Length: 480
Image (tube, rainbow, N blue to C red; front, side):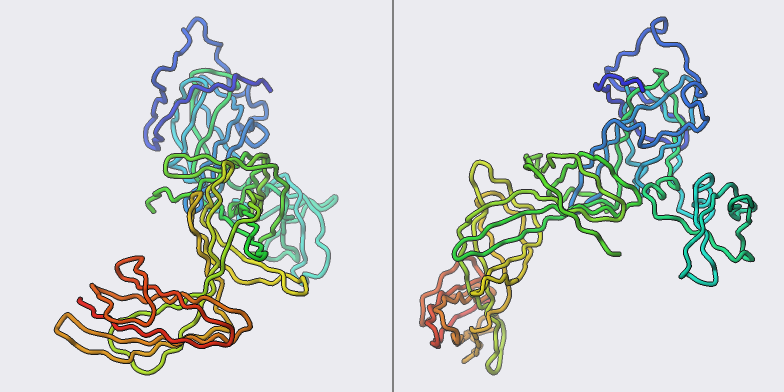
């Protein structure tokens, strides 16, 4: 295979499915007619008359995966082009390609005459793709026996004709056999193809880039947090998901954190070793690059390490949240939530934390690991405060009671509340009480001084010794 210069003069074009569209790149210099190579026929480039390109022609495969948008695929191949129109069958391309997003770039101007999208998979299409390949025959009466090997040699009125040893057998509704296929890699790729009718200004084999979007590929972040006293160890993993029918082999992977505007079974998990992952800001997004090529099989999920941080300072916080709105009667039990608070690392090598699921573990007094809970970790640049809710505290209880509700006018009222806390545990605790107070409000009286972090919130910090009980009383005037 002859390799062309890796420098490709990008020829960007809009696809037309109705009339031919000359694909010309501004500034691209075309060789004079007398110096151009002679015309090359399709037969000379494709001796087997297949006029097909597949993964064997590939030079480079780059996947840019998004968390909430179609993936972007850059597939660089050595393709044979002719002066005459050529109908090219493109294999090993995603079955979930967004065909209208396709962009071709070549070493010289290209002319796209038409594009035909992959059709929905049908029985006949699958059988036709397997003609000339080995298949298996399974008895219709039982599924316990071993399938018998055969070769699909042709289709007769849409029914498979299979060679078994020295005989040919037509497998129709009256046959005791049914055709099954081994789940070999690449089976689905043979059933999906993109047909391009095109012509190149530079005949011969050359580098052509296929750039397109596809559904079925995405990535998410998973975090493992190991809690040890007043510090945590944070590990980040990228979960790569392939919901297409295509195997992406030896691909360079780029992960984009952010949400670009788009307008619109059992998974096997594997672990891979990784040296380090680089990250860079790309406009409003963050781009992570895996250091090694990765193979992402069809229908599978792959987990790869992203980065890790040691000894991040952390503190536990107990929190009670209430809402001072309207009349309420009786004592209301309120959960006491346990939060884990820390600041995202901001040293020179620290990368932003993409949004993802964080799972927190801690060793118990016997040295056995315990799962403390999980929460959604928001996208956090370096130095951002992060708060994760792990669950409800067992030894801490809280109860809210509205002692008084008085109308002062059509849009004005006065409320008095008591929040009772009880610590049944063996350790002291500090409980943060957060009351949502709508409208414009003035605190008239309180047993503990509050803080006001925002216009609609009052916050109190209550120190609660082991086995102790305390009450917070407050009275507030609210104007709606």
